Image: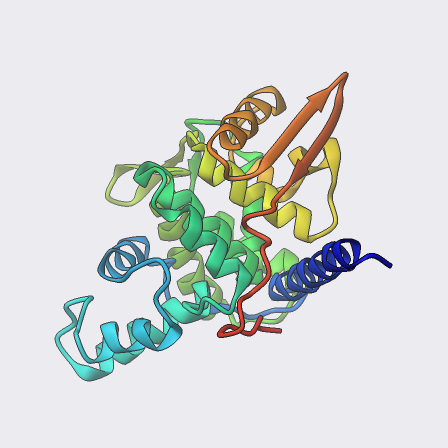
Length: 278
């Protein structure tokens, strides 16, 4: 085998290993548990923390920023520790996690897309939050959605796994998380209605990446749960993918109805100072 060919094969094998490691980070949806039993997705805290650190910051820098520098402006040490622990459960906060590295790569492209990036990453890492998507996707814009709807979805997905009191408090947190992502809008203090979100090319890229990591290809990439969370018809998702391709976020080709999507930058191999998390 020629040296050049060997190098290309090696690069492909390393990229495939990185993708496999990332796919393992998308937690199974049929196992109960997840940070939503304790906290919302904390979009404002995530935005504040990421604004304090460069995109290539090491994992330890995130811990120091929250615990030592009090980047989240918490009153007590225990509150800092709690916030860091929950953010890490939702987002990893580690460049050795491909899911977090990809989120960080896309984070600065359009701030308006950050809440959608956050909910997509959280959905990948939290099965109980993912179970609640059934409620969101079934509701038309303007439909009233109550915490009791999420309570019922949790019980349907994980029968008997949670006490009624735990389901109720978790449902309230989940409702807040979907409000933070833009899928719910408060019309009264205790009433939320379904709202349609408007994804950016970066958010569409992340949704397509998650589908790719689970094995979807071609047209099916635009039909996954992750793509459905974007609230857009497939035709508009194609447009977002084309724009993302122009910006170098992914590679999108639509030739005669044959769809090809790849992620050379987001699935780049980890460098020698990083080790992909399994």
